[in-house]
Image 1 (cartoon, rainbow, N blue to C red):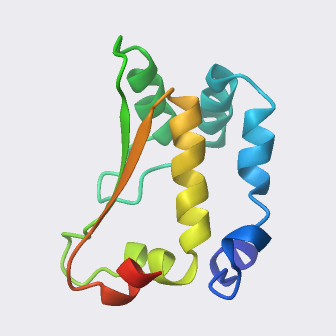
Image 2 (image 1 turned 135 degrees about the vertical axis):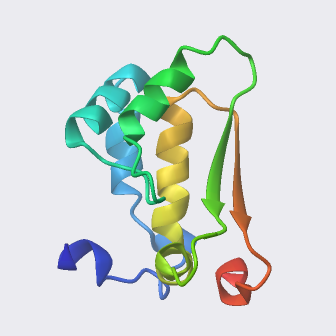
Length: 124
């Protein structure tokens, strides 16, 4: 956990960020990315902790030409700053996660919703 959560990528520039997870994901089929996420038991960061792999799998069953990935950085739960920390200190990891999700779910667009009070997260 320390390797992931105590690292920061704020001193990197886009050109220097390695995007290793995205590169690995692009080497396999989108459905195989979903299978890997399901196997990893990754869960959402909201209060329900919904399994990410299931969410992505459900998305792939939707027959639509337009799919959108939405990164919810609102943090409606009182006193929580977990997403704010990630957006402020690891913005490229957030972007990389959105890109991997977009590839795996065959989504064409991605948006990050950030509450207005998070000036630094918006800047990053």
